[in-house]
Length: 143
Image 1: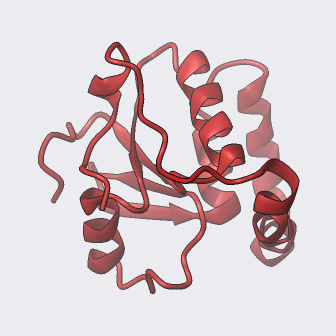
Image 2: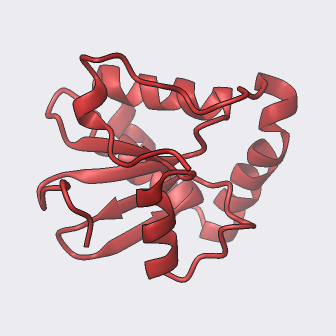
C-alpha cells in the first residue's frame, strides 16, 4: 500500500507540529535498536493515504497511528503507543502489560493527554524536519 515501506517495518504516524509527539518520535528513534520503525507526519501525503485507506476522519484525528504493512493492520491511540513500546527493548517493552487495561480506559487517559498536549508542551509552526542522517527513517511529503 505504501511505497518505500518494507513489510518488516512498522510506520508510526504522528502529529508533526506537536512538541510532545516530536519528542516521542525522537525517544523511539533513540531506542529502536532493531531498526523496526519508520515515521511520517499525519499531515504528510503518506499520513493522508493511510487515514483514507482505513476511513479515519482526518479532521478528528490527532492520535498516534501504528501501521503494519505485513498484515495491513492499524493501531490507534494507546494501543499504538503500547505496541510501539513492545518493540523498544527492556524496560520500555514492559509497558505492554498495560494492554490488559480495557481500551476505553487507556484511551480515556490518552485522549486527556492528547487534548492538553499543545497547552502543556507547545506547538510548532511547521512540521519537524529530521536531520539528513535520520531522513531515511521518514516517509512522505508534508502537506
